[in-house]
Image 1 (cartoon, one colour):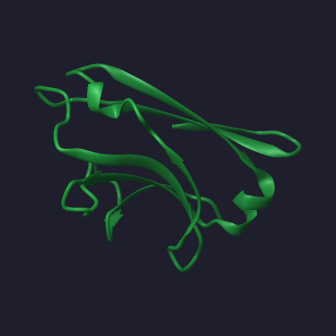
Image 2 (image 1 turned 30 degrees about the vertical axis):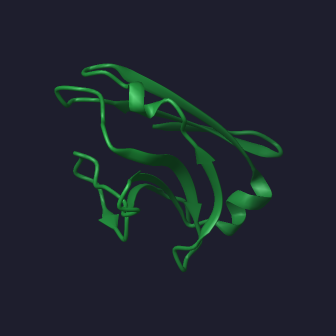
Length: 107
């Protein structure tokens, strides 16, 4: 993951890599989410092509966010929702709580 700050926006680049044996199945939704200090969504970006992510492939995700929204946020997280509507944990050693995989603390 990386980001670049500009005058009015911040561009986030997240590379999602599938280390599993097949493309993910039973996916309802995948999204990047900016959460405030109370862990409520401030902004979201839906990721539509994650279901086609084959084994060992990388899906680059780019998200340009207005700085006014980023100022309201405390965390950048990834939510990977199954059809049971619960968030799934990614196979990484990162914080996970209430369906969110925490990628970055902003403040």
